[in-house]
Image (cartoon, rainbow, N blue to C red; front, side, top):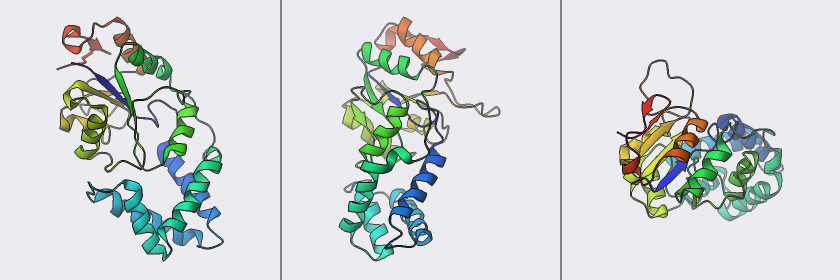
Amino acid sequence: MLAAILFDLDGTLVDLDGDAFLEDYTEKLSGTLSEWIAPARFKSALWSAAVGALATPHPTQTNRAVLMHQLAAALDVSPDWLWAHIDAFNRTQTASVLPGGRPRPGAQDVVHLARQRGLKIALATTPIYDLPVVEERLGRAGLRHIPWDVVATDLFQSTKPYPAYYQEIARRLDVAPEDCLMVGDDAFNDLAAAHVGMHTFYVGPAMGGLEVGPAGTLEDLAEWLARSDLPWERSRPSRVAGRELSE
């Protein structure tokens, strides 16, 4: 049965370019460390460490721990010293990163409806930031004070699009993957949830004929949630934007 909905953040709930946000975040963070580390050196080390740390399975360590270890080693500094500066930046300067962004149409309605219908909800964003950075972007979506059941942060032990990421969210929700619906705008990262048995709903741009399965807008999904009987089985064969929502 449908027991939980996972929502991507950037481009799904908030009209914000996640790649541009990360680029500006890195630029501003490197500036705060420029007294000790040349910005170009820091950014190069960060990108190299991030790719290596997050692409390699690390089931017993958090993303943050792996990243801090590799980045500190590349910069020849202490992980504790490095994290203290990054933590201070996250808590005090995140609002200055790529200012702007607004709720995507239907974002607030669909999240509130999911909660009202008794479903668990997870913020399934890419887990590379700690909580203050995630909350800043949630605030721009008008969803910061929602009682999320799970919020993906750098304290996760996996990342998109790997199956371990979606399994980790399901485990934290205490819900079977096949009882989850992943909603996102990135066909590569978000629809990968299907590989662990999750249902998916695509809210991104047209993919030039590429089959993405159930798709539509957040308003379409909210309408379906408002009129459907739950659990999932009794709602079949519901259709959203002209496509079957469940197989």
